[in-house]
Image 1 (tube, rainbow, N blue to C red):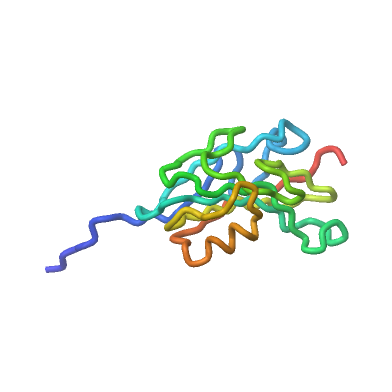
Image 2 (image 1 turned 30 degrees about the vertical axis):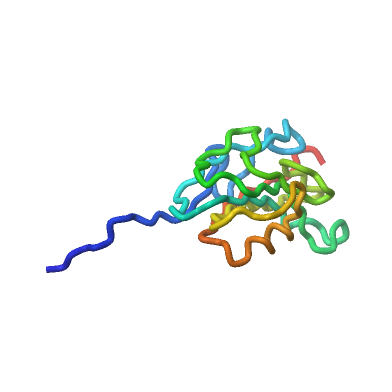
Length: 164
């Protein structure tokens, strides 16, 4: 007789948006050519021992002549409550706001200067709160997360300006 002793299902952490599919086009409304508001997201599969969540949105397709590292950070949030299961359209999730490229606080929508770019929305489940001040950079958040990640996932959308 085989007895299944596993009583808990372990769903993988996931981040999805009802307004764009994985690898799909981010609607113009959420970009610099629209309302420049954050898209809605649904969060699933958060590990039980999660204390906080962190969210980072970046674009790795920036022309090197504009940014030598080729990266533009659009959104940094950390110490998001572990029970957060959705981020409503046009809102900032509870928690602390970090700084994007250029020091922007809060969401800054896609605004690619040259062609279609990829935008990665990365979600991290952490075993502790991060001891960082408001306005911390992506790099500071990533360093503080080291050794505290229980799970991570990402969602990617693309955008190319309609008017160039």
